Image 1: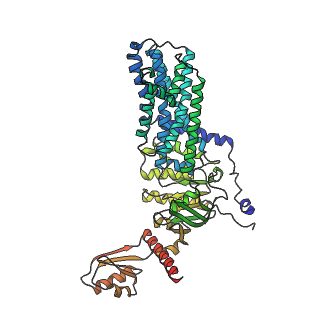
Image 2: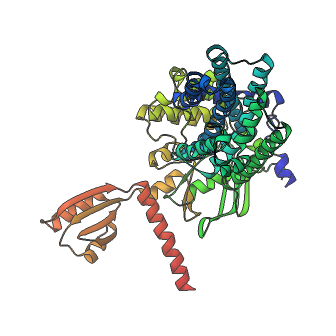
Image 3: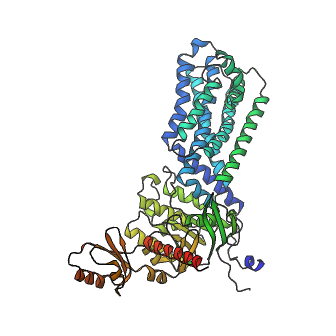
Length: 264
Length: 308
């Protein structure tokens, strides 16, 4: 066996790849993933339009009827609503489609570092989340004239940027459970009810007691609490929500990785 | 032992089950540097499973699977291969050049973008979005992606499906050039001409095993038979004793014959039965040849059982 290994073509230093080249693979993967979705209006338009149109309607045109805090309150909720989409769709639906069309098989056969694939999608989702947050923040500032300090804006931006990660995890898991063209519909059936039940469209205080009690089950509820704290409307401590979201992310990714390893 | 040359890829006694189905039943396969192997067989013969094992996409239930002496699931081993799969839908919104750049980034010492594009004949397509290309052009882009990493072993799964004749010839020429440079190739194809044009060695698979292995000429000798079908009153038994006929049987209303002298047989048939109708002469396709080969092995298996 030793002879076999030692006589393998050793004329090329193929066995290792310089860390600079491995890094380049990560960068290229992320770059391709971002370009690919930025050029895809079918993904980008609904992701950007839904939260901003909702915010325009309820937060700005109808907002002041609900009291002075409404534009800020809805900025937080629609921000949460907005950043769920790139995670669930950019990660989940794209994985479900790529498993179906053979792209994932090809990528697994190629010497692509598995981490580059996941990181690429993650960066794409974070980038879209950043665009959603910027859009809503500019609308809040210039159209709704919401009273936001710079540090509140920054803190909401950060919350939205990193808040996409649990939904990347959930999307990843969903992408391993469902496959093919039916994926967008199925993901919507999770996305929209979850948003509603977490009080992103109507404040939880207006909802039946059962829904209020159930709300802490949803990751979007916890992200929304963080977003509300970021704009100065938080009622509870921040850390429990951060911990719950971290736990969700780890659990989703762990479960998804297990499924991917087993079933491809 | 020091002159022993390690194979670039090796399957030894590889077994793979899907539920109760045995996809690979103790497959042995070895591939050396600069060798061009065509893997042929009917659908469900286990070709895809064999390739899947060598690419590290699936794990064998038993047996050995090695790529450059290592486990194919290790990135290190796969950095020496190039892959072109049959069904892979690449992102439509990315440009050809971007796809090539991305794929090249996975490899330690890739070719330049221009070199890969030149080899695959897609220099004029580099700026085009992948989704706007024709099926044949997309195939060529996938071929460029397969060779861009300077692989020592290339997996090509039905590489020329959807290509016009000119593009196919060009691709064959490039494959020959790569083989001459020492690259080994595993080719799966349904086109006999493709295997004929390229392969040093042909393995025919059926039911998870290799049932025939040899040079292209050896395989061709088995498939050069033609089949003749017609409606006739002639007796099957009598016809099967003619020297022109290798095999004859009744297939529904028609008489079915395989022959290595089609012209002589047709002349004799027409002479013997003036009322003969619906005459057809067909070259036995590769798929049919496999059916024959498969049937032969099935027979030999049952013969052995009877003898035992």
